[in-house]
Image (cartoon, rainbow, N blue to C red; front, side):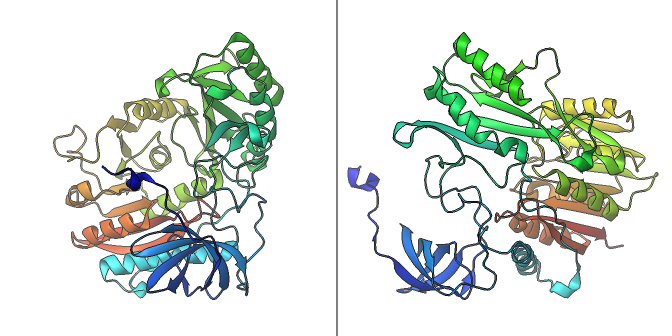
Length: 458
């Protein structure tokens, strides 16, 4: 095979002027040039921008904005000074209220296109909103020693690059994490093993013993290291954790190798609360949990409102995780079954049921990309269903979900395209779309979280 194929593409360096006619589903400005579509990062509809090539493809080109010649009225000064380099956010130049309108339009376009419904055929739910800054409780920070930039960098990847952004704070991370970036850079730069630490997993939960409304967070850091740490490095890291009041874990290999080193003698758990339901949920720092605590509480409340739960209800919660929805449902329904692909999450679900004194719930592990038939729990007569699948959706089991003939289905989604596809399948299986709407789980990004409510046509 020719080596030319692996050569880096040479791109024109001269700025190109472009007229932005619309905004794509990825939040990029759309222009047209020389018979091709041009996607322009950092540009808004109606603007004329000076832009630089990022990539050239056969059917479209990609650019980044260098200068805006006639700013849109919707343009704002980004709240983070690193936004032009950092790949963590892509919409900070856009008014937050316009960002949510954009996300709502993406959902509506996907739903109407896939189903043939008009926007007036179902209720558009009011968007669930929260703080647009300092909301992120979970993240993966890259770490790299870059001598020519003065030492160790800790942060998110740069745009269009695998390099680490040179940053010492972050407007999106919760304050307890954002203020650790600079001291972490300094600390890791003094370690003997500074070349063998590629990333830090960040997780945070509610600070124990404080009112959830105070929004105080207990932080845990999980340091991945490719070589065994010398005793002096472990001592420095432990002292750092003690001085900053954080939980410290080390990860020498895969996820199974993660172990807590500070504080000693405490369970390897964080916690978050769902105060409306009187729940405290424990989780390991490597568990999947929602990154935005306030929006998660609002989503759980709205989902249960749409399910319209009663004590005689038997509810199926698919892709249930550690029981985020399951245990809240159990507070209002007669019986709940939670199903999740991970045995570890099933154990966590039972742990949280025990912590909260809940005994009307059962958890099962099953691959939900495969048929639900012949499962121990599949013969139960469920009259309501909640589903919260991954980005790929649940097309493989929608037919079987429909066959349950549950009177209500609430679908929580992190991908409007697969939600729309699965909605079309539910409509063809005897359900009616009652309502749908978006939740701003990831402000300043193009991620669209949404919820849809379905009712069986009798």
